Length: 224
Image (cartoon, rainbow, N blue to C red; front, side, top):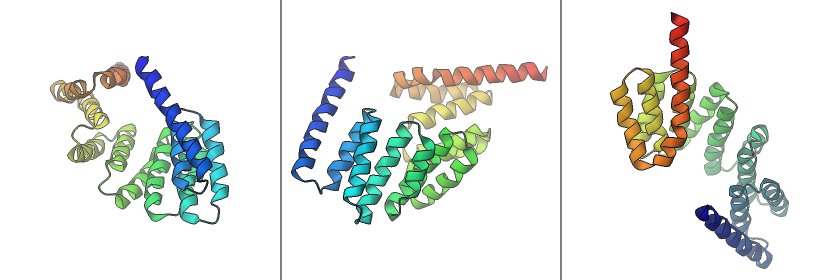
């Protein structure tokens, strides 16, 4: 609780500074983006949405700045669980570099709605545009896993680990895949790595493993 209070105080302090900075220089787009991002992280979604929309109107004749702010607005909607609105915002981004990030977020929004095929299309595009970014590959792996295509999922999770061998989600999901394939030793190898890196994360994800166990048990009973 003390750690959460500290983070809240730091966020509020940063918010106050950025509000002052905007008052002093109302045409610095980065201050609006940073403030909107902090408000989003604080889950102050209505305030963040209002800020980004107001800023978009201020910079409406500067396409690059509008793209940045529109991307920020999309993140607000995504974080608030308004996935259709998020997709609409991200689709408006035209800046080449930001567009790749926007494709990834459209993929994430589709994944959150269990539209895995659509999510894969945007994840593949984002991966082609950002080959050194692990996030699109992890999303592809998540989609394949959700569709029950374990071999393809494992391949993409391994690609993620090749880029970052401490990626908690890739490690845990590989453990889940090995578990479903009845390879307990291989599964434990991945699960133990997750525990060593972040016990709290492992504890939170245990429910995922419990769901898999229940599904396997149910399938076995149906087969009998």
